[in-house]
Image 1 (cartoon, rainbow, N blue to C red):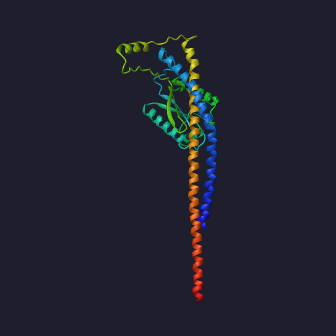
Image 2: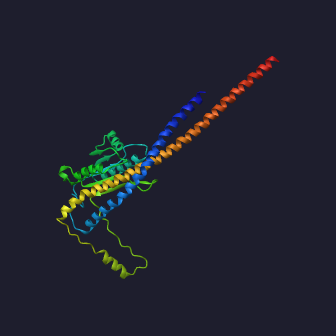
Image 3: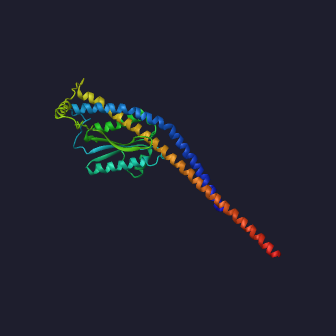
Length: 312
């Protein structure tokens, strides 16, 4: 009887957990479609401003901080985008693990990383371990708005534009989770500043003649000419905050979609596991009840036989 009561208690508690997991899965399912669409719709705009900055940097000789900072400044900023809530499998732990690896690589390279953290779970993790944090932000990691992106970009841009003598940084890195699809989310490390110039490579096909290769090589050397009004520095100064904010906002939206997808997958798996556990415990309870009934019947039959034998 005691075993049956214990099994009934476990079944009841597991059933309560199953309801919680199922509710969390339904909430995540209702949010994921919007989060995914917002992230995918914002990506073309961020890619467009990144391509524009790439083109200007690649085809113009400039010495603006968007391209290069002081080489003798070892300080760099690292922004980690974690979550406010749990129940998302290893979402935050993957970000923290990748951030730690990046910090280790920067330390080995002689850099002095300064940590910026977005998300309550990441902030709690580093504060518990007494890790120095330059700045933190919390709230709405699954639904980030423009305001939080602006606040983060302003703080990072201020740190980047400061000279080394005033504690400024020479590089900006961001660690976030890229949304691939509902099943796959990938942790990425992105260097936002200085802008890395990616040179386009011309590949020669198997049927391409040397003359055509020469024509392509000649055409690839033709670069657009830019005229800046009122001046190059002022244009770059206007582009820089928009560039940083757009990139950070895109990463926040990608991270939000990834967090929601991870939570939905985790809650779906947890719900299925809870149901399987309830089925297993129910079978054990039924087997225990059947064994108890069988034992009682055996005892009754044995007692009846003993009485019949005694009467005889």
